[in-house]
Amino acid sequence: MPDSLTALWQDLVAIPHIGFYLTAGWAIYLVWLSTWIVLQKREPVATLSWLFSLALLPYIGFLIYFFFGPQRIHRQRLRRVRARAALPAPPPGLTPSPEAIELSRLGQATTGLPPTTATQARLLIDGGAKYASLLADIAQAREHIHLEYYIYQPDGIGTALRDALVERARAGVKVRLLLDAVGSGSTSQRFLKPLIDASGEAAWFHPMKLRWFWHRPWLNLRTHRKIVVIDGRIGYTGGINITDEEDERARKDAYRDLHLRLEGDVVRELELVFIEDWCYATGQPPLKQLHLAPQPGTIAAQVVSSGPDSNWEAIHRVHVGAIHAARHRVWLVTPYFVPGEAARMALTSAALGGLDVRLLVPKLSDSRLVTYAARSYFDELLEAGVKIHEYGPRMLHTKALLCDDESVIIGSANFDHRSFRLNFEISVMFYNADLGGRLAALIEQECSRAPRVRNDRNRSLWRVRLPEALARLVSPLL
Image (cartoon, rainbow, N blue to C red; front, side, top):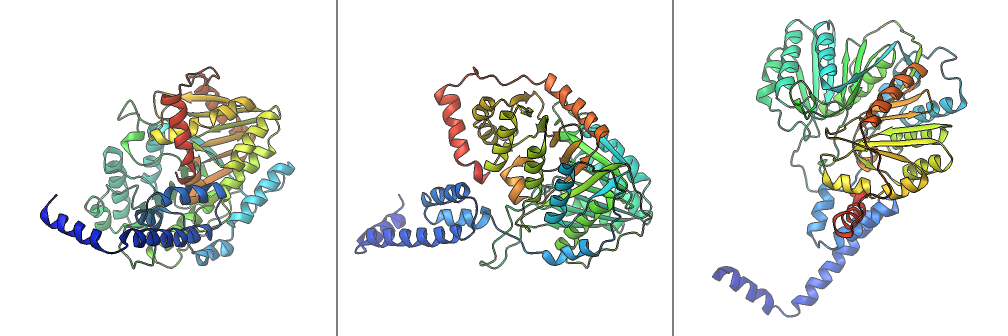
């Protein structure tokens, strides 16, 4: 130890009752931090997880909670945009079942977005299909292109998309690109300069700026949404980001994923969510939407958005509500499975009630901790009768729920605490037998390639059970 550090340590030890002062300081810190966390009124399990974790890290624990702990964002002012929007009502008869009507009311009550319709809802499987369709639609844009992404990489597909946007911006199309500051951190201003020079606009969601100490940073609150709206007529959303990691044409190990291409009145709801995010991130006044004639369709649809600016956890609620309303089938596909008590009870209750409940997850996700946490729930699910399939070797990134034959939810949200409580997410809820049939065929195809998880699988203490149990302890914090 250097002489200066040795002298400092000796001085500290020489202070009378140093142990008492350190212990008292730690106790005061613990009481203060615990009071702060308890007053957040979160789920008891999550609250206790934070308390026990931070109690073991005096002072450092405060910094962890300060930067990564849960918090709410107040931006209700922007929700007036939804109240003023003249969204066409769906034609009568598209949601005849009481369960569908109840879910629709739940979605509207928690988000302000009413039920509407789509004239077309295409399932785009994997990045190659999504990117080809997106670039073709962008080339036909005439008024505006609005894009919001969690991950936008300056790689092959990222460059191709940027160049397509630059070409449209030069042609007079208004281009607005909103990127998450953490997920798209590798995309630089230099990379976006051609778009800016062409009169396009780019903004960052929750940039990592140093602010006053009493203003907690938003490091842990990200926009995980994937939204594209072209001329108010064509919309894209789902799980696929802008990255070569999701383009099977560029790499063989690309993520397996699912996206939506939408047309019809539902696209206006997608655009409303983008407008709120854009105004929030840029401070600009609300954008005016195009005055388009209503396009009523035959597909009952409704956008459901959620985030830490609301206490209702809308996407979480509609998932649990849809599972409870199911009568014969619940098929769930998710890359990250870390359910809360309500979601876990809904799945096990459905299986115990005799429904065909299937869970499709990746064999290995891109987070080993999340993989262990997910598997810690398998024993309970299997005992209840849930059929669990693990997809591999590619990373499965699809987020979809199919209940019975007609109830479909597809979007950006994973089935975990982070998506339900921390991230800004977006899903689209459908009630349509044709779309349900297409999704059912896709899930059946995926399950045929994904081995069933067996009760007699390897359950060694040190390599499996203990890591899973430890990962489950911190699952409310993931």
